[in-house]
Image (cartoon, rainbow over all chains, first blue to last red; front, side, top):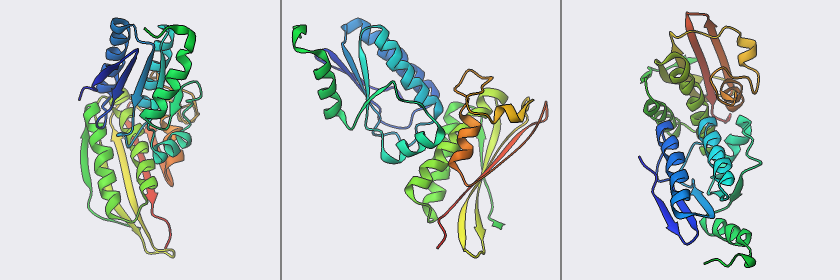
Length: 123
Length: 140
């Protein structure tokens, strides 16, 4: 199932709705990259609240999205990692240290807005 | 340790990986596994089932409920993920964190082992691989 991506000002919001197959994850990566380019986005939120499992493939792919968008000048924030999922990721040995995370969508947007900075014009 | 009849899920695509972990979670929810333990089990299944699609193309996951008369009395889910793929040439290496021959992070097998209570793997070159996992409920 494709992940809907909404444009909100200079940011994109990708809200994962249900369990992701590997194909869905790769599709999400491609969609985010093309939309970042199309909209000249400055930040991306990926909301994973609906995910009950984040295995090594999903984690690695989300981390890859964050790295790729950063190279395009846009920061990615992963929001909504469930407590049990966080526990499993740590047990699994996932390194997510270089990826920005926030509690929920609201916190994620606030984080991106802070990073935009006042001198940026924000047009 | 008594095992009840198994449920079999054929693993041929990434969709089947999702089905296998969802079915296991449903089974586990019927026992007294905590929600956290269900998540750990589902994540471990995702890792071993993905190994099937990555390395062996196809295989199967068998789920069964296991009961231990104790003491302590406990019940759990046993997962057998098996394929007739190429097998693992160097098992010791494959169980090391960070080693991969498939382009991933090398967390699949060692990571899955950390997520469950029992972990066993049998493999031989060109004979396939069988991984057995057990997640027990907390002792009552």
